Length: 376
Image (cartoon, rainbow, N blue to C red):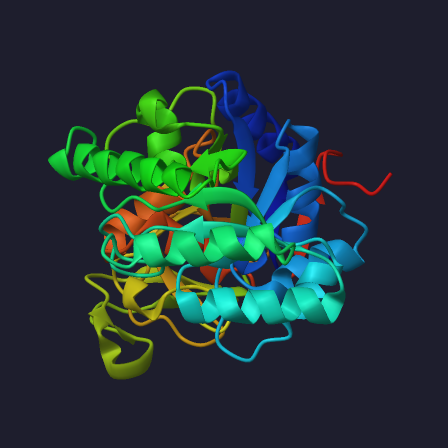
């Protein structure tokens, strides 16, 4: 008998990827970083490949090497590298690596020579996000050095890429500005003899709304998990893959005016029943969901009563016939009246990315439904 669990529908992930793939002429890179946004990187990767993804995207070299050790041979791009990493291990494992500065390019050349084979590299242009990547002023020097390294046999320039700032705001002028900068960066690369097989800038939001940004490869992350990066209604064809739930540990009757949980931040308005749910911020429930987080229990959506604790939350269920052992659903697809991860995000003032990624811990087990992520 389980006490609390996170269920992940792998067939939903497969089908979400298939839906995204059907909407573009580009190849699809499924982004599975951060342990698959809390869904489990390896099962998600296999499900995404089953749905038609041809690439996988991760942040760190360790994530990429984990995929390789699990026997996944599909192209993998890892893009976040601090100085001094053992990048030669990525080169040896045929992991594509990111270069957004001359310094990092130099490390990749050294890694390639140590590995005895050319490093597969994607050059990143900063089109306005001001995170990774070379600025437009730095870009000509980077592509010139990369072209020389490619001519010397140290690098294979597989891609040129960037990342949007505000693609989750359809129609924002920044989107067109970035696309113009990206196009100029590609033209500059071509003048230095770099004609990459893959040009990519589209994340989930741009994959859904800007087909002119798709180029050769799109990089959906949130959307493959069935969650929307956009305001408004859920995109057609996508269904959330994660459900978080727990069984009620106990119920008790308390009088009017009873303070509940640490600090008594909640007081009962009348005699009522409290239900104890054995899941808390140690399991992924945001502490700032105190007094606002929605939970489905006994056919009604309740609000967390009082502060979220490390291991538990409390619900005020009034006179409803709730008992120990009943299932409380924090969020899921929304098809049975339960809140969604997006509902949680709106309630506590964050984004749905954060909600699902929080539930990637080890104390609450993940249970997988469907067969799309099974090892053959």
